[in-house]
Amino acid sequence: MVIIEASLPSGFIMTSRSRMLLENRTIVKKIEVKTNVVYIYLEKLNDESQTFTLQLEQVIQVKNLKPASIKIYDYYQPGGLQISHYLGVGR
Image (cartoon, rainbow, N blue to C red; front, side, top):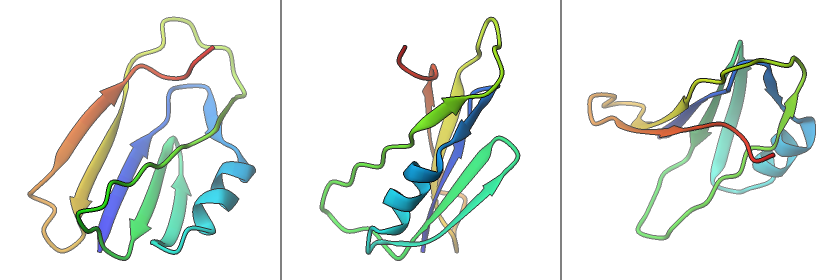
């Protein structure tokens, strides 16, 4: 099982529509939303390219947003971690 762990920029939440679209994908086993972090559990990955889009909604105005991160790792071997940083959302 593979986990995508996406931290959300301060002041943003994932939309319910985004969650619904993710849950409808056959590869997605489960989604957990905790304070400022979304965990997407995937059955497995193969050589096919996959794209996941999180639609966010700004609920609080925050100045000087800091980069958030996305971590992808194997549930059973979290040591092989891949980290990417993103600056937030398009305006």
